Every structure is written in C-alpha cells, then in structure tokens.
Length: 259
Image (tube, rainbow, N blue to C red):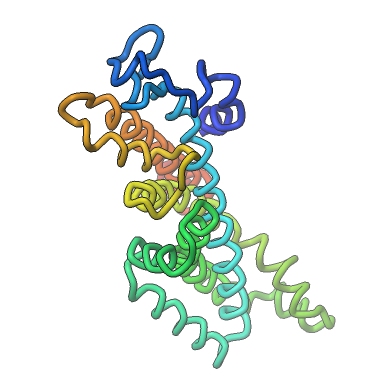
C-alpha cells in the first residue's frame, strides 16, 4: 500500500512521458522497451496513464473512506450512547441506505449530481457509512454501562467529553479495519463508475476510464485492458490483505485463539 501511495505522489517523476502526450507514429504499439505497457489508439503511453490512474483511485478510496467514517462514526456514537428515539432514527437511516445496493446508490447519486471525482467519492462514502454505524453502535452499547463511563457521568463529565475521550478511543480498532476494507471496495466502485463514463472525467486518467477506452480493442490491443485490470486487482487485494492483517492484530479474540 505504501508503494501505491508513493506511485501516486511521485507519478510525474516515475512516468516516462506526460500522460496527455500523443504520438501518432506509435498508435496501438504492443509492450516494448520504449513503452512497457504499450500505447493506446492516440499513441499515449499506457504505463504512464496507469501510473497517473493510481492518483484517482487512491483519492477516491481515501475520500470515500473518510466520508463514510465521519458520517458512520458520528451516527454510531450518538445512537449507541443516547439510545431511545435517536437510536431508532439512526437504525431507520441505516435500513433505508442498506435497502439500495452500494453501486446502485452511488450510480443514482452520480447521475443526479454532476459526474466527476468529487461526486464519485461522495457517492461511495454515502453508500458505506452504515457499516461504520453498525459496528460503532454495537461497541458503544457494550461500553456505555461500564463502570468508568458511569464514574465519568457521576463527576459531571459532559456527553461530548465522554464520547470523544472515553468511548471513541476504545472502539477505534474495528474502525481502522473497516477503513482499509472500504478503500478496496471504493476502488472497485470508482472504476465501475469511470468505466461507465460517470466517474473520473477526461483528461484525468483513471483505471476505470482506461478499461473503458480499451474495450473496443480487446482483440487488437489486449494490453489496454490487461494492465489497468491488473492494477485494480493488485490494489484491491492489497487493501483486503491489509484489512485482514489489521483485524488479526487489533482483535484480542483472534490474537488469543492463535496462541
């Protein structure tokens, strides 16, 4: 994952060509020393465009996870801590959101709003916040009757202080795992929306837009879809493995069972 971040940050220094540069003397060239991933129908270097596509995917993943985390953590803490009508309202919002498949919900939001990177990461974040809420709510319900929480209430600590200083630090571990898993799913959805022309818009490069552009040349130039597809697979696999590793480290039950 650190490698992906470094590739995204230093894309202008890693890529051998500008991502927008056309070379009409090298249209649909197969992989070679000059063009490791070949060229597209405009003579642009596919290796360069895959590298720049890392930026869009990482921005979407981080942004979507951040939006989902902020919304989900807020609702989970408030609903689980206060309970009553507020908790039932949060649960109703979760049920309504989960009644739509995440990709379909993101697709509807992007169509209603203007397509683009910002809209895409917002739409993905809105689709994934219920996961954070459900996890946080169950954790908060178990913690709010603990003796140290009752003691904090007894000495007059505010609800805000109890939530932020006493409860949130004790429930943050599963959130960290959810963030890594959300980022992997966000890359898939962003690539799907970009493939349909509703995500990242030209001239910005995205793995999904590269797949879409290469689908008309599957028989003639399969490298146009092969390398962006491998990049998506590697990124999603990496985030999922990171999530599994963090879960093994942060979950005390799993640590105990492996001993």
